[in-house]
Length: 403
Image (cartoon, helix red, strand yellow):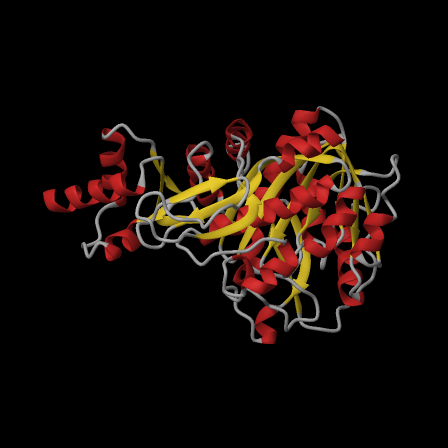
């Protein structure tokens, strides 16, 4: 039975995945789909994030199959409820979904959408602050298998509460849209929020993921939890990570061992990872003082086997963005075990005063030289390689001369 509800703002019914929901009619508020912050509407709704929601459905479906039991999901920043409604309908084996929002318009709209899809028996909706909801479900028998933190801006204010409400072996999904601090435009804000220094480099989006990952690990460690990152990506205007937690102080300590720093030489492009900063940070290749980013996560940010399972899952659905999902998953699987950081070919060519060359040709040339090299999803012109910076530049010069 659908509760009676009449929105006091322009709205429309849209279909996404297997559900139909009522959302603000963004065109009535002067918002177009390419706007990354359609906040002029009384209830937040971003159609661009359909891709994000599709991926979340796939990941949660794979996770549910891995744990082989019914799961519970909490989305404490639900807005109009589209995520939670999709999880309840499209993720098999879900026995409970808790949604909440502190915006009254959002709460009423989400309540209508829950009823519209006949999910009153599966979804509980609360009109409360996100941290309050999470902390009120921190008792052992109330905790969730999956918690999705998808705010507008930074997720940091919700992480501590989220880990309290997460079961042993549970999955946490975290989105960050405040890329300006994470990518080094507002460095002080990044240090305040994420506890690490960013750096303005061509691979800043990977640094953003690793800064967020480090923050997640350190917050989890305070509650004696270790973290394993299953899937991470940078898309559109945001970054997103999925991590599985394990209770235990030893596991927390093991995770902290993978937090360190990335050193970068802006002169010769040499970069390396260290666990602690020491000395004058002189580049071993050219002798110039290096810059650094961190502390940040220097371990793996993707699990190839898990991503492969998500890729298979995508072939079982008919999402509008299926082809884009296939491409992203294929790219990330290929780079899952690649070295940290990447080079943007155009930037390297510009530094060497060379014309831009084919990315694939460059990858092949490095591979023929005995090095690992793959393209990265972080940048269409980016490559990850274990070739030293000097070898990479020499190879690029030879490639351009031949062409």
